[in-house]
Image (tube, rainbow, N blue to C red; front, top):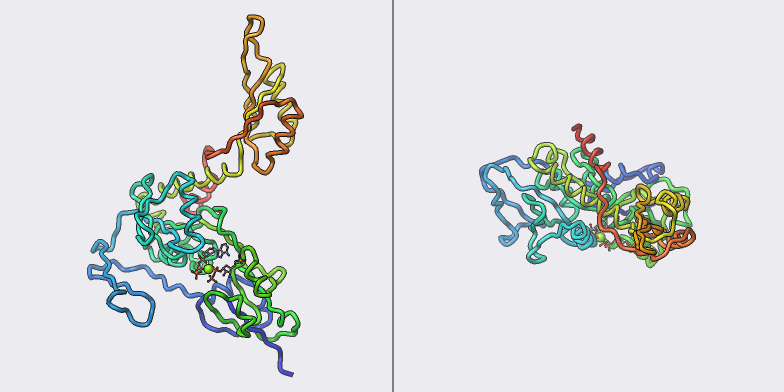
Length: 374
Ligand SMILES: Nc1ncnc2c1ncn2[C@@H]1O[C@H](COP(=O)(O)OP(=O)(O)OP(=O)(O)O)[C@@H](O)[C@H]1O
Ligand SMILES: O=P(O)(O)OC[C@H]1O[C@H](OP(=O)(O)OP(=O)(O)O)[C@H](O)[C@@H]1O
Ligand SMILES: [Mg+2]
Protein backbone atom coordinates (compact mmCIF):
# COMPACT_ATOMS: atom_id res chain seq x y z
CA UNK A 1 0.00 0.00 0.00
CA UNK A 2 1.31 3.42 -0.86
CA UNK A 3 2.32 5.41 2.24
CA UNK A 4 -0.02 8.14 3.31
CA UNK A 5 1.36 11.58 2.73
CA UNK A 6 0.54 15.01 4.07
CA UNK A 7 0.96 18.46 2.66
CA UNK A 8 1.59 21.51 4.79
CA UNK A 9 1.21 25.08 3.76
CA UNK A 10 2.79 28.00 5.57
CA UNK A 11 2.88 31.76 5.06
CA UNK A 12 6.09 32.59 3.28
CA UNK A 13 7.84 32.42 -0.02
CA UNK A 14 10.22 29.54 -0.71
CA UNK A 15 10.68 26.32 -2.57
CA UNK A 16 8.65 23.14 -2.11
CA UNK A 17 10.34 20.49 0.01
CA UNK A 18 9.76 16.84 0.82
CA UNK A 19 10.35 16.04 4.48
CA UNK A 20 10.52 12.82 6.43
CA UNK A 21 7.88 12.15 9.15
CA UNK A 22 10.31 13.24 11.85
CA UNK A 23 10.33 16.65 10.25
CA UNK A 24 6.68 17.09 11.15
CA UNK A 25 7.95 18.19 14.55
CA UNK A 26 7.64 21.94 14.44
CA UNK A 27 10.99 23.57 14.18
CA UNK A 28 11.81 27.17 13.59
CA UNK A 29 14.91 26.25 11.63
CA UNK A 30 12.76 24.31 9.14
CA UNK A 31 10.47 27.30 8.95
CA UNK A 32 13.36 29.67 8.50
CA UNK A 33 15.01 27.46 5.92
CA UNK A 34 12.15 28.10 3.57
CA UNK A 35 12.39 31.83 3.60
CA UNK A 36 14.76 33.88 1.55
CA UNK A 37 15.90 37.29 2.48
CA UNK A 38 17.97 38.90 -0.25
CA UNK A 39 19.31 41.62 2.00
CA UNK A 40 22.77 42.70 1.07
CA UNK A 41 24.81 45.70 2.09
CA UNK A 42 24.63 48.35 -0.59
CA UNK A 43 28.00 49.43 -1.88
CA UNK A 44 28.59 53.16 -1.65
CA UNK A 45 28.45 54.41 -5.21
CA UNK A 46 28.59 57.73 -6.95
CA UNK A 47 26.24 56.70 -9.76
CA UNK A 48 22.44 56.95 -9.47
CA UNK A 49 20.76 53.94 -7.93
CA UNK A 50 17.36 52.80 -9.16
CA UNK A 51 14.78 51.07 -7.05
CA UNK A 52 11.78 49.31 -8.56
CA UNK A 53 8.84 47.30 -7.31
CA UNK A 54 9.13 43.53 -7.34
CA UNK A 55 6.52 42.97 -10.08
CA UNK A 56 7.33 41.66 -13.55
CA UNK A 57 8.48 44.80 -15.32
CA UNK A 58 9.17 48.22 -13.81
CA UNK A 59 6.93 50.84 -15.34
CA UNK A 60 8.16 54.40 -15.59
CA UNK A 61 5.88 55.41 -12.72
CA UNK A 62 7.24 52.69 -10.45
CA UNK A 63 10.87 53.69 -10.88
CA UNK A 64 12.46 56.19 -8.56
CA UNK A 65 16.02 57.41 -8.49
CA UNK A 66 17.66 57.43 -5.07
CA UNK A 67 18.71 60.91 -4.05
CA UNK A 68 20.85 59.95 -1.08
CA UNK A 69 24.28 61.48 -0.53
CA UNK A 70 26.52 60.54 -3.46
CA UNK A 71 29.08 58.84 -1.22
CA UNK A 72 26.33 56.50 0.04
CA UNK A 73 26.81 57.80 3.60
CA UNK A 74 23.96 59.20 5.65
CA UNK A 75 23.93 61.13 8.87
CA UNK A 76 20.44 60.71 10.30
CA UNK A 77 19.45 57.89 12.61
CA UNK A 78 16.64 55.84 11.09
CA UNK A 79 13.82 54.16 12.97
CA UNK A 80 11.62 51.82 10.90
CA UNK A 81 7.95 51.58 11.90
CA UNK A 82 5.19 49.48 10.30
CA UNK A 83 3.51 51.50 7.55
CA UNK A 84 0.29 49.48 7.56
CA UNK A 85 -1.37 46.45 9.01
CA UNK A 86 -2.29 45.55 12.56
CA UNK A 87 0.98 46.72 14.11
CA UNK A 88 0.91 50.24 12.68
CA UNK A 89 -1.60 51.97 14.93
CA UNK A 90 -0.54 50.27 18.16
CA UNK A 91 3.11 51.15 17.50
CA UNK A 92 2.30 54.85 17.15
CA UNK A 93 0.08 54.59 20.25
CA UNK A 94 2.88 53.08 22.32
CA UNK A 95 5.36 55.74 21.24
CA UNK A 96 2.82 58.47 22.02
CA UNK A 97 2.36 57.01 25.51
CA UNK A 98 6.14 57.30 25.92
CA UNK A 99 5.96 61.01 24.93
CA UNK A 100 7.54 60.13 21.61
CA UNK A 101 4.72 61.19 19.29
CA UNK A 102 5.47 60.68 15.61
CA UNK A 103 4.71 63.76 13.53
CA UNK A 104 3.52 62.51 10.17
CA UNK A 105 2.11 65.11 7.79
CA UNK A 106 -0.20 62.63 6.05
CA UNK A 107 -0.58 58.84 6.12
CA UNK A 108 0.91 58.35 2.64
CA UNK A 109 4.12 60.14 3.57
CA UNK A 110 6.68 57.52 4.49
CA UNK A 111 9.08 59.73 6.42
CA UNK A 112 8.31 61.49 9.70
CA UNK A 113 9.94 62.98 12.78
CA UNK A 114 9.80 62.50 16.51
CA UNK A 115 10.54 66.02 17.82
CA UNK A 116 11.93 64.69 21.13
CA UNK A 117 14.59 62.65 19.32
CA UNK A 118 16.74 65.04 17.36
CA UNK A 119 18.75 63.59 14.51
CA UNK A 120 16.26 60.73 14.08
CA UNK A 121 13.91 60.13 11.18
CA UNK A 122 11.07 57.64 11.20
CA UNK A 123 10.68 55.61 8.01
CA UNK A 124 7.37 53.80 7.55
CA UNK A 125 7.87 50.44 5.90
CA UNK A 126 6.15 47.05 5.69
CA UNK A 127 7.21 44.93 8.69
CA UNK A 128 9.24 42.47 6.65
CA UNK A 129 11.01 45.33 4.87
CA UNK A 130 11.99 46.83 8.23
CA UNK A 131 13.90 43.65 9.03
CA UNK A 132 15.46 43.46 5.58
CA UNK A 133 16.51 47.10 5.76
CA UNK A 134 18.04 46.69 9.21
CA UNK A 135 20.20 44.00 7.67
CA UNK A 136 21.10 46.00 4.59
CA UNK A 137 22.06 49.01 6.70
CA UNK A 138 19.24 51.24 5.45
CA UNK A 139 17.61 51.35 8.90
CA UNK A 140 19.21 51.37 12.36
CA UNK A 141 16.37 50.58 14.75
CA UNK A 142 12.89 49.13 14.20
CA UNK A 143 9.70 47.95 15.83
CA UNK A 144 8.08 44.80 14.39
CA UNK A 145 6.66 41.46 15.51
CA UNK A 146 9.15 38.90 16.76
CA UNK A 147 7.78 36.48 14.14
CA UNK A 148 8.87 38.89 11.40
CA UNK A 149 12.37 39.18 12.90
CA UNK A 150 12.59 35.37 13.02
CA UNK A 151 11.23 34.85 9.53
CA UNK A 152 13.11 37.52 7.64
CA UNK A 153 16.13 37.91 9.91
CA UNK A 154 17.10 34.25 9.50
CA UNK A 155 19.09 34.23 12.73
CA UNK A 156 21.46 36.91 11.43
CA UNK A 157 23.68 38.03 14.31
CA UNK A 158 23.53 41.64 13.21
CA UNK A 159 19.98 41.85 14.53
CA UNK A 160 19.76 42.56 18.24
CA UNK A 161 16.49 42.42 20.14
CA UNK A 162 16.70 45.42 22.48
CA UNK A 163 13.25 45.00 24.07
CA UNK A 164 11.56 41.64 23.61
CA UNK A 165 8.15 42.37 25.12
CA UNK A 166 6.42 45.58 24.04
CA UNK A 167 3.12 44.06 25.09
CA UNK A 168 1.07 44.20 21.90
CA UNK A 169 0.81 42.28 18.62
CA UNK A 170 0.60 39.03 20.57
CA UNK A 171 0.24 35.97 18.37
CA UNK A 172 1.78 32.56 17.88
CA UNK A 173 2.94 30.69 14.82
CA UNK A 174 1.11 27.44 15.09
CA UNK A 175 0.38 24.21 13.27
CA UNK A 176 -3.27 23.50 12.61
CA UNK A 177 -5.02 20.47 11.16
CA UNK A 178 -8.12 20.03 9.03
CA UNK A 179 -10.76 17.36 9.88
CA UNK A 180 -9.48 15.08 7.11
CA UNK A 181 -6.06 14.93 8.70
CA UNK A 182 -7.50 14.10 12.09
CA UNK A 183 -8.83 10.81 10.64
CA UNK A 184 -5.61 9.83 8.98
CA UNK A 185 -2.38 8.49 10.44
CA UNK A 186 0.67 6.52 9.34
CA UNK A 187 2.28 9.38 7.48
CA UNK A 188 5.40 8.77 5.47
CA UNK A 189 6.02 12.00 3.65
CA UNK A 190 5.20 15.63 4.19
CA UNK A 191 5.37 18.11 1.39
CA UNK A 192 5.79 21.76 2.32
CA UNK A 193 4.43 24.59 0.27
CA UNK A 194 4.06 28.26 0.96
CA UNK A 195 1.33 30.78 0.39
CA UNK A 196 0.38 34.33 1.24
CA UNK A 197 -2.77 35.15 3.15
CA UNK A 198 -6.01 33.29 3.90
CA UNK A 199 -4.07 30.06 4.52
CA UNK A 200 -6.93 28.77 6.66
CA UNK A 201 -8.83 28.05 3.45
CA UNK A 202 -6.20 25.58 2.21
CA UNK A 203 -7.46 22.39 3.98
CA UNK A 204 -11.06 22.94 2.83
CA UNK A 205 -9.87 23.74 -0.69
CA UNK A 206 -7.84 20.54 -0.68
CA UNK A 207 -4.50 22.27 -1.30
CA UNK A 208 -3.07 21.24 2.11
CA UNK A 209 -3.87 19.04 5.09
CA UNK A 210 -2.04 21.12 7.68
CA UNK A 211 -1.30 24.82 7.81
CA UNK A 212 1.28 26.77 9.77
CA UNK A 213 0.07 30.31 10.34
CA UNK A 214 -0.19 33.07 12.91
CA UNK A 215 -2.93 32.63 15.47
CA UNK A 216 -4.09 35.26 17.91
CA UNK A 217 -7.70 34.93 19.10
CA UNK A 218 -8.14 31.61 17.26
CA UNK A 219 -11.30 32.90 15.53
CA UNK A 220 -10.02 32.41 11.99
CA UNK A 221 -9.06 28.80 12.75
CA UNK A 222 -12.42 28.09 14.34
CA UNK A 223 -14.41 29.69 11.55
CA UNK A 224 -12.54 27.52 9.07
CA UNK A 225 -13.08 24.32 11.00
CA UNK A 226 -9.43 23.86 11.97
CA UNK A 227 -7.80 22.77 15.21
CA UNK A 228 -4.36 23.63 16.55
CA UNK A 229 -2.08 20.67 17.18
CA UNK A 230 -1.35 20.29 20.87
CA UNK A 231 2.27 21.32 21.37
CA UNK A 232 2.33 22.66 17.82
CA UNK A 233 3.33 26.21 18.67
CA UNK A 234 6.45 26.95 16.67
CA UNK A 235 7.00 30.48 17.93
CA UNK A 236 5.42 32.92 20.40
CA UNK A 237 5.44 36.48 19.15
CA UNK A 238 4.76 40.05 20.21
CA UNK A 239 6.10 43.43 19.16
CA UNK A 240 9.83 43.93 19.80
CA UNK A 241 12.37 46.75 19.54
CA UNK A 242 15.16 45.52 17.30
CA UNK A 243 18.35 47.19 16.16
CA UNK A 244 21.29 46.60 13.88
CA UNK A 245 24.45 45.69 15.79
CA UNK A 246 26.57 47.46 13.17
CA UNK A 247 24.55 50.66 13.54
CA UNK A 248 24.65 50.51 17.34
CA UNK A 249 28.40 50.14 17.38
CA UNK A 250 29.45 52.19 14.38
CA UNK A 251 26.90 54.89 13.66
CA UNK A 252 27.17 58.04 15.75
CA UNK A 253 24.25 58.62 18.09
CA UNK A 254 22.41 55.32 17.48
CA UNK A 255 23.37 53.80 20.83
CA UNK A 256 22.37 56.93 22.78
CA UNK A 257 19.07 57.23 20.93
CA UNK A 258 18.35 53.53 21.49
CA UNK A 259 19.09 54.02 25.20
CA UNK A 260 16.57 56.86 25.40
CA UNK A 261 13.87 54.93 23.51
CA UNK A 262 14.50 51.86 25.69
CA UNK A 263 14.34 53.88 28.92
CA UNK A 264 11.07 55.50 27.94
CA UNK A 265 9.56 52.18 26.82
CA UNK A 266 10.60 50.41 30.02
CA UNK A 267 9.41 53.21 32.27
CA UNK A 268 6.04 53.31 30.54
CA UNK A 269 5.55 49.52 30.29
CA UNK A 270 6.46 49.08 33.94
CA UNK A 271 3.96 51.77 34.96
CA UNK A 272 0.95 50.69 32.89
CA UNK A 273 0.18 47.75 35.15
CA UNK A 274 0.33 49.79 38.37
CA UNK A 275 -1.75 52.25 40.38
CA UNK A 276 -0.51 54.70 43.02
CA UNK A 277 -2.52 54.39 46.20
CA UNK A 278 -2.64 56.94 49.01
CA UNK A 279 -4.59 56.38 52.21
CA UNK A 280 -4.81 57.79 55.70
CA UNK A 281 -4.27 55.57 58.69
CA UNK A 282 -4.54 56.18 62.43
CA UNK A 283 -1.41 55.14 64.33
CA UNK A 284 1.03 55.77 67.17
CA UNK A 285 4.10 56.20 64.97
CA UNK A 286 5.25 55.94 61.36
CA UNK A 287 7.04 52.66 62.18
CA UNK A 288 3.93 51.14 63.71
CA UNK A 289 1.83 52.09 60.64
CA UNK A 290 4.54 50.78 58.27
CA UNK A 291 4.58 47.46 60.15
CA UNK A 292 0.82 47.11 59.71
CA UNK A 293 1.04 47.86 55.97
CA UNK A 294 3.92 45.43 55.45
CA UNK A 295 1.99 42.68 57.25
CA UNK A 296 -0.44 42.54 54.30
CA UNK A 297 0.55 40.44 51.25
CA UNK A 298 -0.77 42.87 48.56
CA UNK A 299 0.68 46.07 50.01
CA UNK A 300 4.46 45.95 49.80
CA UNK A 301 4.75 48.68 47.11
CA UNK A 302 7.79 48.92 44.87
CA UNK A 303 10.29 49.42 47.68
CA UNK A 304 8.04 49.40 50.72
CA UNK A 305 5.49 52.00 51.82
CA UNK A 306 6.15 55.73 52.20
CA UNK A 307 4.62 56.78 55.54
CA UNK A 308 4.31 60.47 56.44
CA UNK A 309 2.70 62.10 59.46
CA UNK A 310 -0.48 64.18 58.92
CA UNK A 311 -0.33 67.09 61.38
CA UNK A 312 -3.32 68.81 62.95
CA UNK A 313 -3.98 71.14 65.90
CA UNK A 314 -5.88 69.54 68.76
CA UNK A 315 -6.59 71.39 72.03
CA UNK A 316 -4.11 74.04 70.90
CA UNK A 317 -1.33 71.50 70.29
CA UNK A 318 0.10 70.16 67.06
CA UNK A 319 -0.31 66.38 66.96
CA UNK A 320 0.20 63.62 64.42
CA UNK A 321 -2.06 60.70 65.13
CA UNK A 322 -2.83 60.08 61.44
CA UNK A 323 -0.34 58.98 58.81
CA UNK A 324 -0.53 59.15 55.02
CA UNK A 325 0.76 56.11 53.21
CA UNK A 326 1.75 55.95 49.55
CA UNK A 327 2.29 52.66 47.74
CA UNK A 328 2.19 51.27 44.19
CA UNK A 329 -0.01 48.26 43.57
CA UNK A 330 -0.53 46.05 40.52
CA UNK A 331 -3.79 46.96 38.75
CA UNK A 332 -5.01 43.40 38.96
CA UNK A 333 -4.68 43.49 42.77
CA UNK A 334 -6.71 46.69 43.10
CA UNK A 335 -9.70 45.43 45.03
CA UNK A 336 -7.83 43.03 47.29
CA UNK A 337 -5.42 45.87 48.13
CA UNK A 338 -8.27 48.21 49.07
CA UNK A 339 -9.77 45.48 51.27
CA UNK A 340 -6.43 44.91 52.99
CA UNK A 341 -5.96 48.64 53.54
CA UNK A 342 -9.38 48.87 55.15
CA UNK A 343 -8.68 45.80 57.29
CA UNK A 344 -5.66 47.53 58.85
CA UNK A 345 -7.51 50.81 59.43
CA UNK A 346 -6.99 52.66 56.14
CA UNK A 347 -9.48 55.37 55.18
CA UNK A 348 -9.79 57.95 52.39
CA UNK A 349 -8.15 55.62 49.87
CA UNK A 350 -7.17 57.51 46.68
CA UNK A 351 -6.18 55.62 43.54
CA UNK A 352 -4.39 57.26 40.58
CA UNK A 353 -2.86 55.86 37.41
CA UNK A 354 0.93 55.79 37.10
CA UNK A 355 2.57 57.12 33.96
CA UNK A 356 6.24 56.19 34.28
CA UNK A 357 8.47 54.26 36.63
CA UNK A 358 12.11 55.10 35.97
CA UNK A 359 14.50 52.77 37.75
CA UNK A 360 18.11 53.68 38.41
CA UNK A 361 19.12 51.76 35.31
CA UNK A 362 17.20 49.40 33.06
CA UNK A 363 18.28 45.75 33.11
CA UNK A 364 17.78 45.57 29.35
CA UNK A 365 20.34 48.35 28.84
CA UNK A 366 22.98 46.32 30.67
CA UNK A 367 22.00 43.28 28.60
CA UNK A 368 22.34 45.29 25.39
CA UNK A 369 25.80 46.55 26.36
CA UNK A 370 26.96 43.05 27.16
CA UNK A 371 25.54 41.69 23.85
CA UNK A 372 27.56 44.40 22.10
CA UNK A 373 30.65 43.58 24.16
CA UNK A 374 30.75 47.12 25.59
N1 LIG B 1 -4.12 37.93 14.26
C1 LIG B 1 -3.12 38.64 14.79
N2 LIG B 1 -3.25 39.19 15.99
C2 LIG B 1 -2.25 39.93 16.52
N3 LIG B 1 -1.09 40.17 15.90
C3 LIG B 1 -0.93 39.65 14.70
C4 LIG B 1 -1.93 38.87 14.09
N4 LIG B 1 -1.52 38.52 12.87
C5 LIG B 1 -0.31 39.07 12.78
N5 LIG B 1 0.06 39.74 13.87
C6 LIG B 1 1.31 40.47 14.14
O1 LIG B 1 1.27 41.64 13.34
C7 LIG B 1 2.32 41.59 12.37
C8 LIG B 1 1.84 42.25 11.10
O2 LIG B 1 0.73 41.53 10.60
P1 LIG B 1 -0.09 42.08 9.38
O3 LIG B 1 -1.24 41.18 9.16
O4 LIG B 1 -0.35 43.52 9.55
O5 LIG B 1 0.94 41.98 8.20
P2 LIG B 1 1.34 40.74 7.33
O6 LIG B 1 0.51 39.52 7.66
O7 LIG B 1 2.83 40.62 7.44
O8 LIG B 1 1.02 41.25 5.89
P3 LIG B 1 -0.40 41.27 5.17
O9 LIG B 1 -1.45 40.80 6.12
O10 LIG B 1 -0.55 42.70 4.79
O11 LIG B 1 -0.18 40.36 4.03
C9 LIG B 1 2.69 40.12 12.25
O12 LIG B 1 4.00 39.96 11.81
C10 LIG B 1 2.51 39.67 13.69
O13 LIG B 1 3.63 40.02 14.47
O1 LIG C 1 -6.48 34.06 15.46
P1 LIG C 1 -7.07 35.28 14.81
O2 LIG C 1 -7.30 36.39 15.79
O3 LIG C 1 -8.32 34.96 14.04
O4 LIG C 1 -6.00 35.86 13.77
C1 LIG C 1 -5.30 35.00 12.89
C2 LIG C 1 -5.30 35.53 11.49
O5 LIG C 1 -4.70 36.83 11.47
C3 LIG C 1 -3.70 36.84 10.46
O6 LIG C 1 -4.27 37.11 9.21
P2 LIG C 1 -4.52 38.57 8.65
O7 LIG C 1 -5.82 39.08 9.13
O8 LIG C 1 -3.34 39.40 8.92
O9 LIG C 1 -4.65 38.28 7.10
P3 LIG C 1 -3.51 37.70 6.15
O10 LIG C 1 -3.66 36.20 6.20
O11 LIG C 1 -3.88 38.27 4.82
O12 LIG C 1 -2.18 38.15 6.64
C4 LIG C 1 -3.20 35.40 10.45
O13 LIG C 1 -2.53 35.11 9.23
C5 LIG C 1 -4.47 34.61 10.64
O14 LIG C 1 -5.12 34.34 9.41
MG1 LIG D 1 -1.56 39.47 8.06
